Image 1 (cartoon, helix red, strand yellow):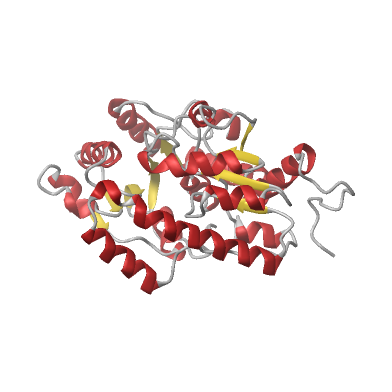
Image 2 (cartoon, helix red, strand yellow):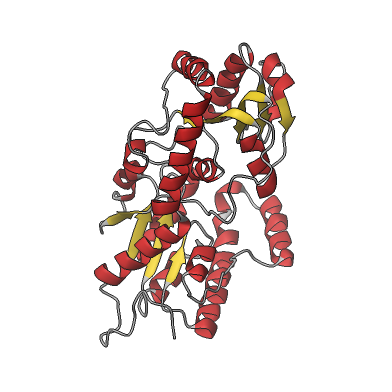
Length: 341
């Protein structure tokens, strides 16, 4: 989003609320010496310090708009900042997670609240009474694109994504990939992908890397298979992952367990969807027999993203929403969605 705002001509200052290393070390030391139920006595003064540092940075930069997502800024500081300009808070992770308690209270202090998943708004509304606006993920054509020298499609299916143990997502993905590896050639690139060997030996044999890939490597991975498997997290009830748009921009054909709202972004059957392992296997068998149709749908998906779903489109939508709904704009109308001259 930062890059998209800059591409639109805005001057953007990115603030990282992480405390200096010495204060982080002090926090860790004090936590070891303090019973868990009293940990807040350590964290609250440090959060207040982070808030004061952030407000100081605002006085130096004097922004017309503040855009935030999950961060360590205390709610009182957000409320103080919102007196003078719009503050947009964007939920990019589920509000039902234990870690989201701070985010819900932070969002309550903002002037505008956005959610990348429509279903999350029900929980957000438990705390935030104001209207919550949709703001889905997008893609960047500068980062994801078909390679000039496209790699040879040497496997049937490729999967790129986290396979972290200890979560339902990790188990579901590992199990589905094991099922695929029983029938098709498979390449897997994913964090913790090599940790499932005892449970899923065929998956273990398909792992190419267990480390995050650079963007160029991602483009190569997406182009290396006839079909890209896009498995959504169970937390995405009414949203599409950023990877959906990235795969499309890379010019690759994808199938996935997309939520029902996929047709709002990709009309028709551009992205074939499944909801069971059996249906997944059936789709792979079907589309492996249809190389020309795969190429046509991949090209159509790429056009859809470039025309309607880039990060620049999302930034424009956010700015337009704020410009037309804000009750905190200057009375002289000086704030608007256009870049400063």
